[in-house]
Length: 160
Length: 160
DNA sequence: TATCTGAGTTTGACATTTGAACTTACCTTA
DNA sequence: TAAGGTAAGTTCAAATGTCAAACTCAGATA
Image (cartoon, rainbow over all chains, first blue to last red; front, side, top):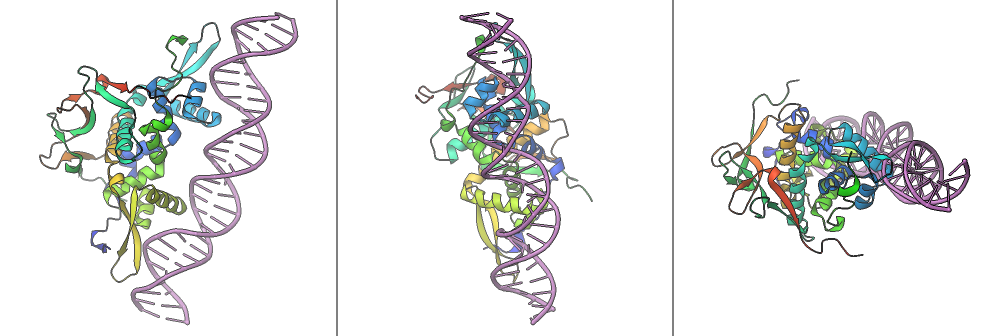
């Protein structure tokens, strides 16, 4: 039972200035994350997304529209044989850059949810070595997660 | 306009076997992410969380209960001066390990959402060097994100 | 006895989500 | 030319979730 000496009543950074909070707004949704997962694997079509990730039709249509507006996905025309043109959805640069986030989630779940590991490793395209996600300094030194600190810039909390 | 030659109609890994999908289930919620953010900064009390992250009372109560059940947070008694004991919420090991995920989100938002950088750097506790999140091999070599590949283990897709 | 405080719960209006059925636009086959 | 097929949605009504505001609860204080 602690006392109040170590009470912290607010984060040092305003929600509006916090990238993490903005990301939570844009990515803090189960369906969006699952759609990004499918997109990384190359699944692009409405019905494929719907069937593979078990997303209800209406929900999928909503999310795709919103994610295109948010610049995570882009719609592209495709044509299957002689069939008429339809739309498929692929990652934009912004969407593709969420890879580290999704992989951080995979590493976390594999290590902390004690339900067995995802049958997938990320490997180096050059050497084939199995990769981990880690904090690294400017000279490439790896720093353990227990050994990192936040440094907050001055004037971070907006004056009212 | 592409043709159907490169169609991928399903991910190579079943949803049930996918750590990323499990993480999406547990972390794919804006409020949970914001609560974790506050928890990392050391904000622990109900009203502080509510006020600092702008979470509606009922929603916060729901999320705290669920996150304790999911093992992300733990409730602990505290006593403020002579006041009666109340509950505050702190990170468990599982919750604390989401740091890489939240920081990956921060790095992503700062780089890709063109709305200004979070006024915070992660630094090495030893050297003070500014850190980045990167893929590293077993010998500590950094591998660029464009240069990584997934290697999927055999028998990944459950036979029906 | 009445008041205060932090941590919830309740309420009732509103919004979102869902599975199932329907629609749309075009292609194919009879 | 009519009937049927197909992928990508839209629409519907019921169930669920969200929200602000009001209320409750348990003790401490006046």
